[in-house]
Image (cartoon, rainbow, N blue to C red):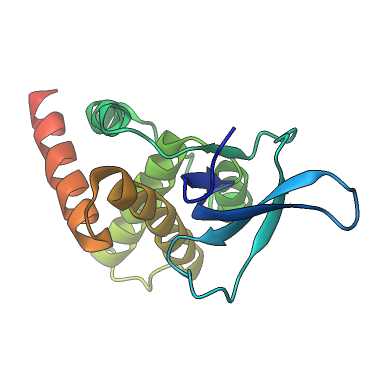
Length: 167
């Protein structure tokens, strides 16, 4: 069970628990969550404490970040089939593991790089999912590592580069 002021991940968003209350609809006890980067109160979510859907989890630890860095070079990309990239990206984004976000980032980055090398326009779907995956991944890593978003991104990229060189 979580407490007020705990940071958690709800689906893919890092959130802060700002309270608990009974739902007016189900009479179930619920956490009141606000997205970590929007704590002005403009967005609030009410999520059952029972967490039956399993959508609330702890923010990753430093050790889990280190494991992700070590595994990142070996994480496979999605199959590059232009006709169904959006559905592939969307299906992977619905998952909850950070390695799935790395998969999206690697796939979309590689596809965009190949398009640039062929002097083609970047695919908007690749760019859209690259931005989403980076946002979710580096927001969580920034919280776990006590860094800014940009610092977490630079750190992750540098450390993955070192891990890839070792492999």
